[in-house]
Length: 222
Image (cartoon, rainbow, N blue to C red):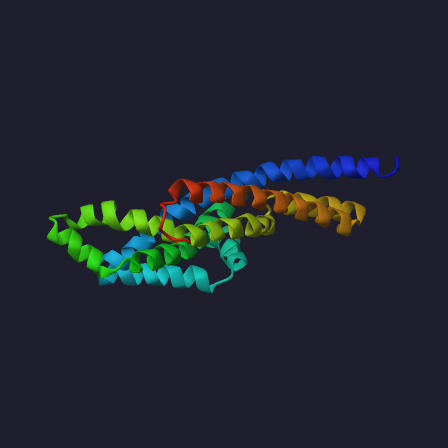
């Protein structure tokens, strides 16, 4: 048993250090992705043809290419044109842009799901376009987009593990270093999986709480 102690001591020290980095990656990426997704999703529904095409192109680009390729371009490709990003900055920017593209699709779908009759009814009551969106459309759209956006945040927690490919040493990167040193990959990645399961469980609990706070009797579920 004494022979295992240095291994586990080093493992948990490294994983706890990586966990802090993972959280530092996930939180700003989730907030930034939601912000960009809401803005782009709204533009894709309410803007003119040029902005709509730009929004559609952005969503198609980042949804249609692998995240790891996007990270490589940000970290290894941009220096070729004189732009240098730190590993952390490259990872966060990549996660925000990729997550925002997916979030925009959920927001767009939620906005389009609001029936046109509600817009016409609001206009008949004297609401302006902005008042209609703010007071009638958005409260409903937020509830309808919550499940998709929440699911994307869960995915973000898991694909934050790709940050190590651009040398940002988060949970997976720290664990891989220890596994390579001791050649004990099964134990290390089992523990890493438990860490991610804990993060996802916490996120799901938070999303459930938000769902309860936003719940209106008779709206959205039986």
